[in-house]
Image (cartoon, helix red, strand yellow):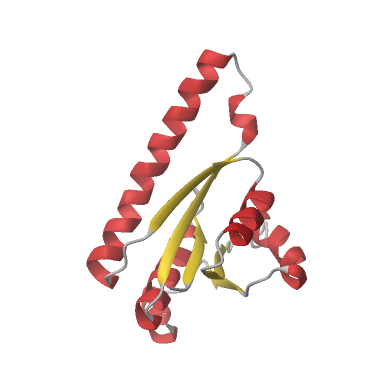
Length: 151
């Protein structure tokens, strides 16, 4: 089964990317993999403290994931997978795409502020020419109604 890969982070635009991935997956009989990446710089502490912080980060991610997963299950009939990785975002995304041949589309949400689409979108668009799969960038301020129309 083909899967949509979407990135779970704390950005506002993440919500529209999640919605789009779930709605497209539901309408194309596909799945959704949600990737959350813990940056390595969060754990530059003593080993015991770093382990505790790592566990807390994973718990936060799992709680955040469950909110999206419940909506996907209840509204779209999609049961998403969660992948949690530690490292730099771009290499982790590319590694997961290489490791999982069922991932067919990368879905990212674009920020709407003056700072531009966001660092992840900016970095991934530089990689777009060499990606082994298509990438869909969802505007962060697109309405739910418009998302429903296009999916």
